[in-house]
Image (tube, rainbow, N blue to C red):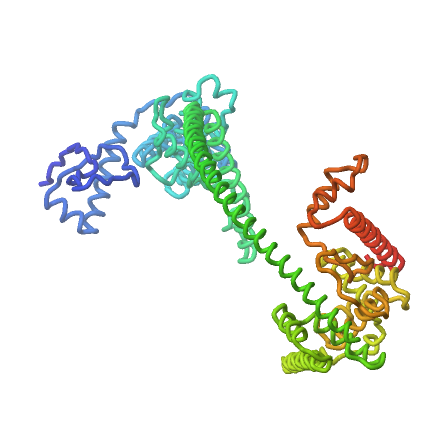
Length: 632
């Protein structure tokens, strides 16, 4: 006995999982929609037959034979439309590739949806109607099989009955519409235009779960899932059916390889064109989709709202920061003003102390110079006098205020000239020993420094004291950062010196040697000071002057009191305040500069004008020299 098969329809869907203890959920993928499958419960007899291949084969043959015989009896007299008959008669067996295989078998309505059973049934019907033997029996004249249309029926079933060859033919189905709707068509109705197109092209997908286009109210996730699927669309469509030549027709292996290579290139080209068509379809749909446009507008509005909120927050934060910054600046300004006032008072105090110390130092120097002048500088001849004057100048320049006071007190307390001379010479000898110790300490420094100090060329001996003073003045006049600094310094020296013209290299070398504190340069500076003193005061006896009388200002740069930075600032401010058209200009300027007379202010102004004029002339000379030598 054969067990009776019962069809039971069961809804198969996703299994329900127990609820999670924590609500921490997220969407990672989507399950396919619920589908209906047919379950046929069978017994052990079916299992035994299914497990035995021979029995299954015999049973299948018997069932097929019985089924075919039954169907033959049922479909033997099935009518065929005249159009199908005319189509079969018009076929040429040599042009079998151009025929519609589904229409040959009468399945033009089902086409790719036809099942294997439909193919067998249709083929059997065509065989019963158009088999050559049956037609001969009916008295019809039949040509040979190579030229009879029945071979087209056989060829159609051979292709459609083979799953691989059927897929190849379905890929180039002539009834499939490859056209892509345009944006103009989408204006008539987006969903009515594109839904059938996507449903038709979904047959080429390798994945069975193909999302639908949806409707106007589809969510954003559904729309994104749809376009994500189609932008990454994987098609099984292939074009081997359109191969120009069959590989099996090659006479040898090389020819078959060449045919396969040509066919493969043609297939790949058509595959690329197909993917471009799909991409064009998706791009057109995405551009015309009203849902996408609505989502973009919503996203734009959301970003604008977020931007406005961010700007408002930023503006409020900026106002708060500005308020805090203003308060902090006010506090800092008050603190800075207080500190500046304290610093100004401290500087004023230090300035007064320094001014008092300088005045006292000048007073002590004058006392020492007057005491030495009263005793004829403790010299018996001019040569000894020059030596004593050098020692006196060195003592005035290098001794500190306490040392000068102690020396003056000692000389005032000495009753005889010999005692004063002994004190003077003792102090001079002590100063020389101290300078010698400093020289030894300097020479005992790093070897590279000592070697550089000893590297003195004959050029150093050719610098007279006046040029050394000019060099010091020029270096201070043209600080670091001046364009072509050393060329400008050299031009300044060449304008104010009678010695042979010096180059920038000579000036730079001499300036470096001055920085090494060579004792010989100190001797030259002292000699220059003595010569200047001789030219100014004369060779007669120097008498004491009343300290209350202001000292005379000399024209040389070393004579007279030095202008302080504060006095210079007051003078510049007064020059700006009182222009040249002001009546009694210099009297009013002198009133603004304490401790300076009208004559001092006028002389200082002339010195500054001459200094600026000399500086400009030196720069122009350096520029002209650079242009002549071609140096940038």
